[in-house]
Amino acid sequence: MNLLEQVRRGPARPHLVTAAYHTPNGPLHLGHIGGPFLSADVVARHLETLGHPVARISATDSHESYILMTARRGGLTPEAVATRYHDEALTALTGLGMHQDAWPDMHRAPYRDLYHARSHATVEDLARRGRLVHETEKLLHSTTTGQGLVGAFVQGGCPACGSGAAGSSCEACGLWFGPADLTGARPTLPEDGTAELRAVRSAFLPGDPRWFSGEEAARRFPPGYAELLEAYVAHNGRRIRLNHPLGWGVPWRGGTADDVHLSYGTGTYAAFSILRDLYRDADPAGRDAFARDTDVVTIATGGYDATLPWMFVLAFMDDDTDWQPHQHHIMNRFLLLNGSKFSTSRKHVIWAHDYLDAGLSVDALRGYLASLSDADGESDFRTAGFTDWTSRVLADRWDPIIRRALRDGACHDATYSESFTAEAVAALTAAADALRPPTTSPRAALATLDAWITRAEPGLAAGHHPLWLAVVSLLAWPLMPTLGTQLWKALGGTGHPTLATPLPDRITAPEAYEGLSAVPRTSVEALLPQPA
Image 1 (cartoon, rainbow, N blue to C red):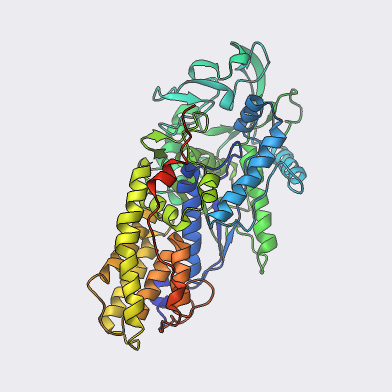
Image 2 (cartoon, helix red, strand yellow; image 1 turned 90 degrees about the vertical axis):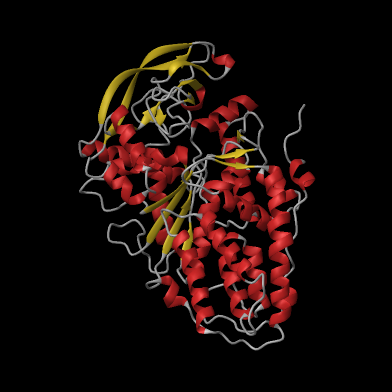
């Protein structure tokens, strides 16, 4: 049985999936995992079940201000911080089944020199075409250390909503603004003393209104997110900042000693251009994934606070550019932990590496995080809710149903009624609709999987078991890859579950299914930082 054409709705197309632009200033925690990294992996795996070739190429932002902040707080060099947490992030992602085909560190060879060169070449090209604006302005600096109080080094109130904010962005309302716009601005670190204004020379890139617009953003982002760009333009004008006095990053040619490229300006664009090269080098046909006439589908993921930085790439476009940004952006709102925001500084976290080191179920974690995934509002990872879900749903409901299907199906030859086949197509189509970017919803895909498993709770007609199990496998693999793989092997399938070949129609190795079990609450709560 081959259901591919009924579900895929078109030919196979190459895809590039880019997961966030992660800042390696500390270990990955479950807040990171449950947002852009989970969404990227789920959509990539789903596309592979439909026979699409998928490349996963992401990067880390090794020149962001929080790298320098972590270094200063820990008495380390920013180079050591960026290197350590870049590598640790890849190890954690791999352990969670979220492998990357390329994971370049723009701070280290072989990418460092290229990243610097691209940053400088971008500015030179923009200047040659008359697209830069230079202004002298006053920005805050520390009176004791001389540190430019930008990014992580300055705190205050959001000029738009009044919420507490740091640097140039507000996590509450999503707005980005100038580093001197904070109300009640003050240094983050006590040793930076007080703040004083110093004159600096800043470069800005005016955005072409045909591209740097809410209308263009609406084509590439989920509904409602383009309003963030419209709010940004209303506050800042139609332009983005390209440099700032951080002292860590790519030196700005012709600037002062601490003047560097802003990682959310030319930094993002330079990294984006390297991703373009990496895909072209890896693709058998040598395609340019970001050409305006490409047949490659490009998808990026990010958290709510990363929405505008992704949109800033639009500012680089004009009629002479031969490229386009990612076509689709899957965004997530913040994930809380037991009612409060994940916080590295407050140590209110569960580290991904601690979860893996404890030997707890990766599938259970991925499934529960999928149930919380939401582009429209904050969600809350409750440790009690997680362990209850693994008991109530996985161990007490799904596991008995799957075991019974494996047992009963071994007694019957496969025979599929027209109506049951139609049900299978409907379930697979519902999952495909749920995971279509940019409105990708792992939560909706998990609900489809749950409904299909529950469909067999009263029992299945003789001969329906192999098809039911195959569909469980296909629906589960993007979300819970171990479950999907085990059931595929139980049906005699090889590789990963896919609709690109005829579905297996025999239960040949029921022992391949190892079962679903509850995760003990004590084991999860032991991962929470303990009071001193």
